Length: 120
Image 1 (cartoon, helix red, strand yellow):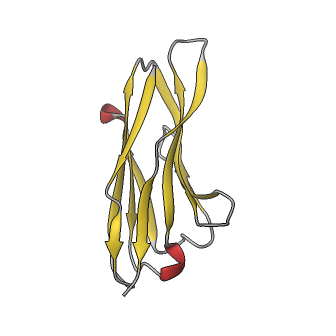
Image 2: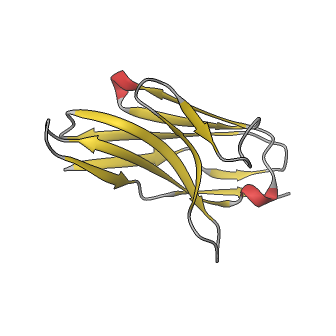
């Protein structure tokens, strides 16, 4: 069993910053890609950024230049530093990871989500 637990969401004013964290725990053999997605009310879930185990990153156009994804492989944790936040960044942010629980079994896991609200 694998769990992803997010933290760091909250209410912030436009132009402010937040740092999200997501820690994976349980029976973990290895973790490939880790990423952050978000879903605003009435919208589809969309990619914010992801990162490979080797540190290669990929960002949605809306995130480039403002958000930074990073990970600590020793802690099985992925981070999302969000700067210059805008009201349109308001959404529930979900952590995602491809976790191998053995050398031959891997599954995609999601966190429970953390609310980010950007408002004055």
